[in-house]
Image 1 (spheres, rainbow, N blue to C red):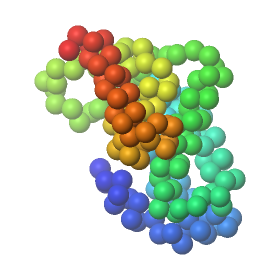
Image 2: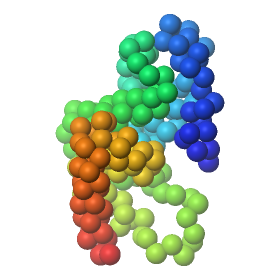
Image 3: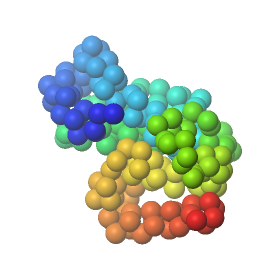
Length: 177
């Protein structure tokens, strides 16, 4: 898998500027560059493939309307991922229920003798709030560190680390260590 930084380097600021100016082809290239990451994060937040896809579709509509307001083109990835995570959380709120984590979230690359039972992991993730799943997704699926996450979730870097520590402790407890 291509590292996020490598993908980001492949998206020139001129492409972002062209898309912000209304160039549909440039925007299509942005979609191609970031859509997969947005869907993965929305899946972690929502635990539902339909909700995740709807959320990402809504996120792209929002991005199309607001791209000209992006101050720092180098922050395009965190900006898009935050929109996707927020849309997934809002979609869950609108549907007002939590669902189990779908099988599509399984990692086909894991070793066959991996001790983690994915069914248990899905159930444990399902006990978390959408906000906690969003934080887990931004950190462990999208690869943001605590300093980057702070402004996204309205916490200091120390607050992010503390909250992640509590969330992980809860998951460990759910999974029986």
